[in-house]
Image (tube, rainbow, N blue to C red; front, side, top):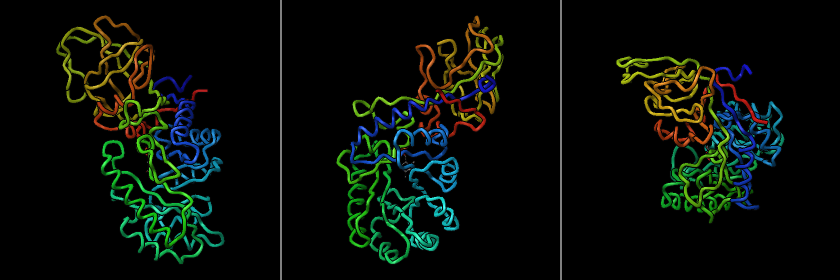
Length: 370
Ligand SMILES: *Cc1c(COP(=O)(O)O)cnc(C)c1O
């Protein structure tokens, strides 16, 4: 049990598969679901997560970088793999050799892929900027782009896609983006012919927008059990696969006037006991949670005292300590009747579940439930 002696993540891949099937049902049989497994599957472990999703029927995966794609090919993942971000032109040969599918967003990139693709057409997806800006061909310059790449050899323009700026909270801007997408696709199809794949929706949009010009969706955060922007009836019964646990390291008595942690931000007011939890910001437990989070021990919430340090967090365990070293501490997840969700932790840290998940530290062993 050495993996469970300090702090660790328990990951229930069955919950991810459950979420995948819920998303498949939501979007219906004519829409292909491409699970997004970038950033180590949002901290859940890209290799085992992708392998299980592939067994569950997923045929496409979204990654952010060439190296993420190569890692998955290296362990035998056979499904199609779209690199959602920019790929350096120097990596074009590796992309071709590993049968990865790049996004293209400039004529220079298209040129590099065309040269690398030697014998057999390389499928590519054109990324369009429909109003969010960072990446993609501007939607109003799509005709120009298509004319510049039309005659390149060995490229198969099989897909076209875009990304929403604020799908959950800004329906007006999303409608504007959908409109730009429809128009850009129609212009591009006049020059390059029909696209097999058109896609735009990540988690929030696939749950909220039903009248859609897409036949593929790209869920990330919803697979991992959270979609902050979607509430009420529209939020499906997703399961949270990740639990952050630790073993209580020490229980100590403190007296009024004692200070706790760096910066002396907490002063003890009454005689009580504190518990030392061996988890810190180097594990991905944000320093922004300082003096502002609970953990669960023996089924009860315990408030944090003082700052989160690199390796340690301190909690109050009551006037008469009702727990002891070795007890299991839940920092995110359920224990007894209590639950700390990723949404709660993210909100308290002033961020979003995507960041909370993907920043979970390397030094936490991932333990997969059977
Ligand atoms: C990360 C990413 C996604 C997944 O987004 P979620 O909001 O986590 O579902 C989809 N598409 C692109 C292009 C992305 O970069």
